[in-house]
Length: 577
Image 1: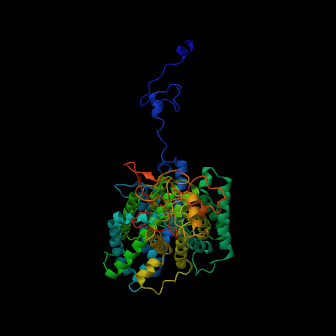
Image 2: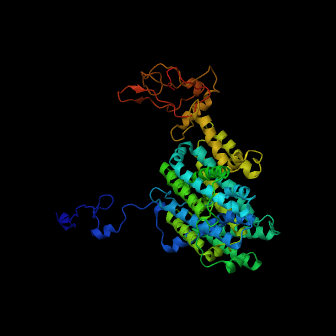
Image 3: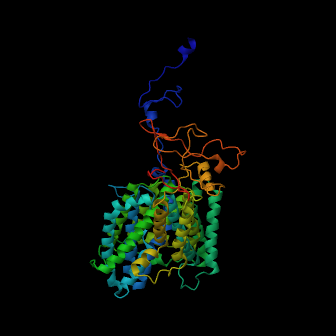
């Protein structure tokens, strides 16, 4: 009694005062103390980082995407001979639109956005069609490009709910191939950056450029390894680029001229290049590029879902494509081009393991600020392309690794998946190794197939449907089929004796389970003579097939075989497996 009387009084469990885990009574805490404790930790994607970690991580994303974001308007503007003011307007529009699209992707306002750390920017696929359209007219042709861009963006917005249905065509064998191709197809971009970026420059591919790229790569890897587990190790890309830029400074590799000519403030003007003109042929070409961008963005979204641990769902794709469509339409108004998601930022998330979407939200805000204050954008432009090339090797390769990890779930040892992967990678790498591979085809087909990501995606979806869904069954699910069952089926055809099928009749009870034959038909029997070999060989401890499933009536029901059909498998006349 004394021990009971000396114990503290029990505190009733209320919403504000819960018992400790395990049911033991601990120290009494006030409701306010419990209120300060979050009930559940947020998902890393929804985590809000402190400013000392948020700002460097956002700057890392800005630095990784800046070159790819500004390259298309610079190439198109340079080819058209635009004035410095017109070129500045193109760059400002590209930065502002990319920033607004990135913010929309991370916040998901009114069903617009993916709620993932996803970035948007100008698609590089628009360069060739834009140059082909504007070549005869010069700068006057930009009004046709921007008019078609508005139409393509609105079309993407309308197709977003239907396009999400394609998610069921992206099992691990397809999504793994596409994600792998996203990373592999971008590695040549890193190689061009590492050599200097401009193939016509006299120092393109020079030892100094390659040494600068190599030094950036080595510094990044050393920082990542030495500071592993710390925040500085997670921003190794940013620190490597800063170090590479400082190394390049005394060798004259840093161009500071843009700082002197950058204006202090610039506001994008709607229809600065004239009112949009709608030309059917230009619209058709731009719509094809928009579809390519939608496919690439969906592939990047699948990769991002795998990297962040938040699997992509139908509504995620719909929201992401809505943001993509609105961003593209707004770009046509302000003087920018078709938008897409940037795979290099997906690789950066995988490498840094910083999955907070609010980091990318701040990245978008910084892009908008750089568009409005061009001198800030000029600061980022100080990073030499060889430095970006050395860093690009890391985050582009990280995307490919994410694809390989996805392929590891695709049961490549059974069924047709290994064939799907081999053919898909071949078709995806043809335009990467030889960019002129499809030049003799009609322009729309060449535009679609000229993107290795899009070509590989289409081939993977088609082969997966033809080989795994059409005709004789679906691909193996390694989580649903016991290893013993797959092994037995793989060795059945080569076993001695008469032709064998696992779906033949057997006399009950079963040799190993004693289960009677289901009333609806024969359940596959396990023939030890054919599967295990001689009679004196020990039988396996468990049968490779599961027992019949009992239906609501208590009677056994026929169950479809969940895996790939063996060459000797067949359907019985009743339609059962």
